[in-house]
Length: 239
Image (cartoon, rainbow, N blue to C red; front, side):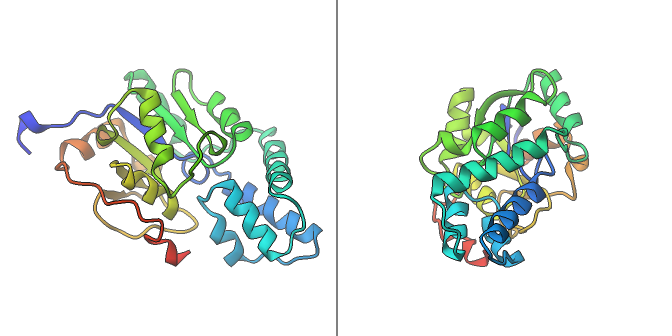
């Protein structure tokens, strides 16, 4: 790419569960506990179907399996159980606090873009290095959750940046689909359900492999291309 066409990194948008913090097991355990309390068996296949999804979707899956609670009751129950776990501390994944601090020191804003509701999202965001998160988009703040592009587009708007000049960091199929549909390059870390390779997806073994310069390089070395049109069926058949 010619120097005049280089794109400078304006912001980094972060998924939360399984990407920055090792809280995915908390959600899966909470789901399993609720199912067990209703005399149901919650399988790994059931759990995998919820990864990266909006909380009402998770509630619907639990209801489909036989949990006789309302959507609001299930969501509140899940939130209470996960928040209780977080009282013992935030389980940051290796490399997370270091890269967040690097970006904050360089005055590159970050946003947290998660399908977890605000009680969990704000708790994690407030525990991050000072000056890290300039916006938090939680699952209860958007009408359409991942895999729809809305969460990432809302985050970019809150930060006042161009989506194409952001890099998203994700671990799930629905999250990666969401960020790509919003026109962003995506760094993909290992997750419970691994997204497929494709344009605009940059796979790493962990956040320890991610640096401020590597994020900048993704934009500098990537030609501007049309992002794929949003199609909720994209890759979700694997779920």
